[in-house]
Amino acid sequence: MSILVTGGAGYIGSHTCVELIHAGHDVVVLDNFSNSSLAAVDRTRALAGEDFSLYRCDIRDREGLRNIFQKESIDAVIHFAGLKSVGQSCSMPLEYYENNIGGSVTLFQVMAEFGCKKMVFSSSATVYGQANQAPFSEDMPVGGTTNPYGTTKLFIEKILQDAYAADKDWSVSLLRYFNPVGAHKSGRIGEDPNDIPNNLMPYVSQVAIGRLPYLNVYGDDYPTPDGTGVRDYIHVVDLALGHISAVERVLKQTGLEIFNLGTGKGHSVLEMVRAFEAASGVNVPYQITARRPGDVAVSFADCEKAAAVLGWKAERGLAEMCEDTWRWQKNNPDGYEAAGE
Ligand code: NAD
Ligand code: UFG
Image 1 (cartoon, protein in one colour):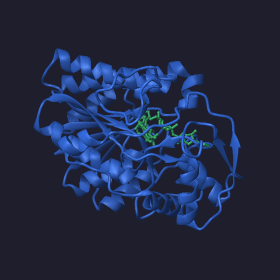
Image 2 (image 1 turned 30 degrees about the vertical axis):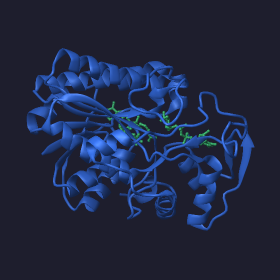
Image 3 (image 1 turned 90 degrees about the vertical axis):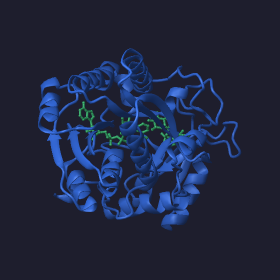
């Protein structure tokens, strides 16, 4: 089957393309390269052992999208394209709403125009907001997002629910990711933040490589065993494999389903620092600072539904997540930029 991967040059998209091709699917990548590089696509092709079409296109560009659907025979779309920085979304909310929501609506309309109504969407555990208690399960009420980025995920979920309510030909899988970390085993593709990283593991690995002096630990007074925030870290390759299961299911049926993609286990910030130090053999200095506004104390998934319905389960543990993050960081100390490819 031929799968259009929007944002396929990005962190999760590139890993998913490798696994899609290994599972026997054809891939078409669309990206505007606002947060990614051509080197990632070249390396993805090399790892997958296969070429695929690449379109430099923006999801807000209706004619550009039509051109892709005219040229390619697309069976389903995995929709990663979007802006994802929580902090930036607070200072540029209108750009986030335009890019993520406006772009998604344009994409869904062009899909419908070409009779392609099979969609796997990258949502986030952020939609569970602050009122629910972990483990989060898919039937909990959503809302109460604390930043415009999170609100874009909530709204796009709702837009797809409304599209399905109006037209039962749609087949939609809403995937709520927990905290993706790690990199491909080869050390060739991984997460390459543009600026100073917002997320824990890229920050930790940049401290370890010497690009940043120390980690700021945002609060040690949460109601958790060591006082630091607890999250459900999932290896990006496990996450990618979850997309293969989800897309194969939407290809077979119609309906709208929601799945958490996590491990079901929570780990604190300090546990992650220790696991990273053990995997890398490098000391990671840190300082405790104030809580980061909008953070919840504990977030981890109830993964029963994905296991029961998709037959998918995350298999890679903390040591592997840290080893793979470190291999990527060590082999690419300045990310893709210095690759000269
Ligand atoms: P990423 O930034 O590496 O990948 C997103 C890709 O989309 C980038 O290559 C970017 O250039 C592209 N893009 C952005 N706007 C576009 C547009 N208008 N048109 C075309 N391409 C565009 O991010 P990622 O970590 O791979 O995340 C992929 C998806 O998963 C995003 O939707 C993100 O919100 C979601 N998600 C990520 C996390 C996480 O922690 N990484 C957690 C939950 C959900
Ligand atoms: N943290 C630090 N120092 C840092 C960065 C993070 O102590 O420099 C802590 C945070 O306070 C939190 C934990 O590490 O306790 C994880 O933080 P991340 O920023 O890595 O991840 P979040 O859980 O805050 O955010 C992630 C995604 C968002 C998504 C959210 C909810 O990055 O896109 O999960 O699903 F919205």
